Amino acid sequence: MEKTGRNKYYRSKAPLRLGLAGGGTDVAPYCELYGGTILNATISLYAYATLQPRNDGKIVLHAIDKEEVLTFGSQPLLPLDGRLDLLKGVYNRVIRDFDLKPLSFTLTTYVDAPAGSGLGTSSTLVVAILGAFAEWLRLPLGEYDLAQLATEIERTDLAIEGGRQDQYAATFGGVNFMEFSANDKVIVNPLRIRSAYLHELSHNLVLYYTGTSRLSSIIIEAQRRNVENNLSVSIEAMHQLRKQAVMMKEALLKGELDKLGEILDFGWQHKKQMAENITNDAIDEIYDAARKAGATGGKISGAGGGGFMIFYCPGNARAQVVKTLATYGGQIKRYEFTPSGLTTWNI
Image (cartoon, rainbow, N blue to C red; front, side, top):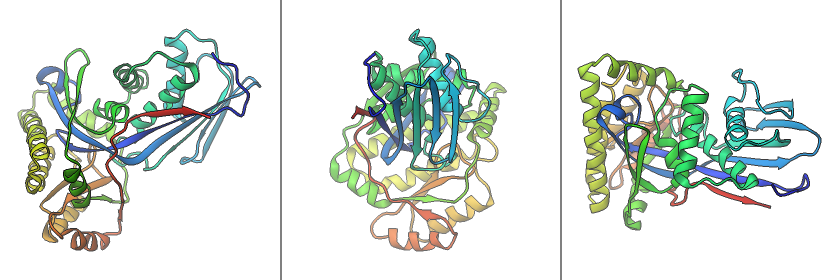
């Protein structure tokens, strides 16, 4: 490891994502039994991590957006007690997997969107923290290695329910068609979408924050239980969402953008059948109002229950849809699609 003073910074950023199609089919055991397909795209909202080596034998964890700071003596295993466990979990795994002595550092993090908002914030933050450690310690992690390790930290070490798309989206970046199957096998297929199509997509796709967050693990656990119990309605809904991902891929590659709203609505109608609490009366009311204002389709982002929603507004419908959404007290979030995934550097 390179010897440095306290003024050396090892930084990283990883993009959040919009799940456009197939959401939920990357969750076990469905993807292991039937195979999952996801289409997502990273956007210009990020999770950030900075590591600053210390020489005083302390570990300081500082989550700026949560306004929380924890301090420990340098040790090989930080306690997982519900306070900044994502940060602790990454450190614990890095020490264990790479057979390192306890480190002394300050880890500072920040995310551009609230936790539980449906943009993959937790998983993206894990990727960003891993990236900062890889930059500092020169860890031999390729893209697939890093995304898989991030997944194991969340799903196994921290026992957080969820899928696998977010870690791969944050690591690879861009517009990707992802395939998930048994034994943790993942194939990321980058899509070469014409720039004009992407510009039109970002213009027409309104990102709306409802002002509420939710604990996605509760919804995902219900979804998992439905598959384990062989609930036919839920499983058939996931089959249809797999098809939706293929439909979305073909429409984007061919530039058939007028079909996107219809494809989003197709997926939303089926997604609601996967588990309880994916939608509620407030979400349904917002969705119906956006459709009446000119949106041709949309969905809740992430597992459901709250957070961000997206609406496809063709032609010049965007302005009226935005005006209508403003009456519900939420917030429109501006973004652009980003071609890059995890980025690390030191200064």
